[in-house]
Structure formats: structure tokens, C-alpha cells
Image 1 (tube, helix red, strand yellow):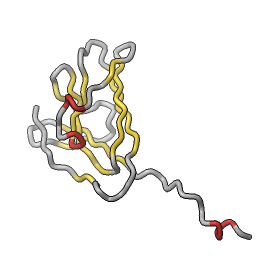
Image 2 (image 1 turned 180 degrees about the horizontal axis):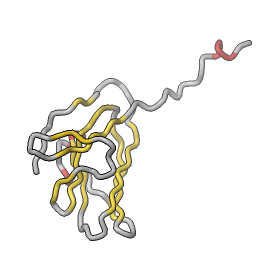
Image 3 (image 1 turned 180 degrees about the vertical axis):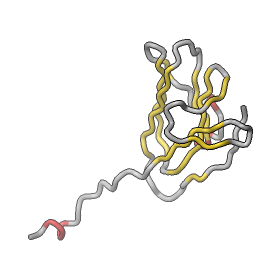
Image 4 (image 1 turned 30 degrees about the horizontal axis):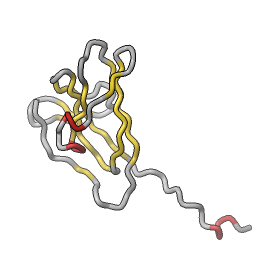
Length: 116
């Protein structure tokens, strides 16, 4: 299955990248990758790592924005079953939707606000 490159990313706004964790369970899978608008739909760019009991994991960082993606399990494209949102793709399937929020501002509070 091929995927659309259309997406609504917020890039170049000076926001810091945010840690993102993809998890998937498939006891018989040989390879699992993540492909989406964040890596130009190239599964080889984000292979997941096999853990025990058929669990797969990929940790990465992404700038805040909205991304479409799929899991590629032994060469078969599929939406992430753990994704709370999906959108139709132009090929009759579904893409998972990932919303990466800006991290909270970690700057110290204004000292004037702390004065009695």
C-alpha cells in the first residue's frame, strides 16, 4: 500500500522536538517499521526493535505537529491498532494520526509573580 505525502506539519517554528514512543505487539512478526509523513513514508528509516513476547518498540523525537503514519509488518502496511485516530488515505486504506503537542514551557516563573 502506498501513502499520500500530504500532511499538516508545523515545522520550522522554533519548537523543540518531543519524545515519541511507538509500541506494537505481534508475536509472529519478523520485521516491523514505522513509516509516515515524518520520514517521507520510508519504512527503513524507522525500524522498530523487537523486545520479548512479540513486543516491538521505536522511540524517536519529532517536532510538534500532526502526522500520518502506518506500521509496516513483514512488508504489509497497516494502521497502528493503538492509535486513537485514523484518517482515510487515497488508496482506500487508513492511516494512523499522531498529534505531537509542544512541550510545556520549562522557563522559571516570573519573579514578580512570586513576590507578596
